[in-house]
Image (cartoon, rainbow over all chains, first blue to last red):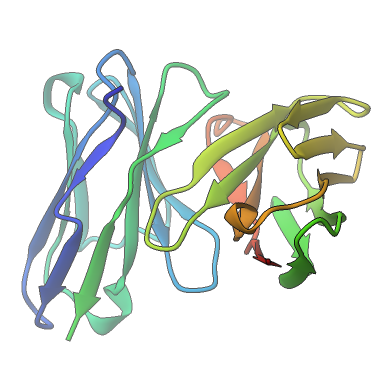
Length: 112
Length: 113
């Protein structure tokens, strides 16, 4: 059973550096989501793709954040000029419909 | 704006001591209410989706119920392996964003042997 895969699992970076995370969804899933979770909080929606089209970006996603899903397969989330406030767990999820989302194990980002 | 409030924030039980977690919600046209389990350092794991008031779903020691304003997750005779954070989320049916989940902060459940 190949679930949602995220890479890397952990990332430590210095403030001002750029980072990129990758998400490989379950193969037949056409919908892909990015969420962000900080300690003691529930996940917060960041962005949504249906196939290769990015259909919504949360206002939480500043101009320093960009996400892509080339050819409707894997997705990348890039953060430019990282800030300490970007430290969080970045979760990717995929689904066939909107009724059941499968989450990956996340990428834990620490900005020093 | 959709809102989800979970209570209590933390719950400590003895093995075998049944209890319930609460999820209160405010949403513009509920499309679905979701329960997830999250272990430390991992992503949320899907448990249930409920769609209409009166609906109930069960899985092993867990039973989820739904009313028009809240959902309960009942845990019967819990075991230490049930220890986790339980997250509730709603999906709104009206408006364009009917795929987005709004999560509560979760209830941290600890079951002592």
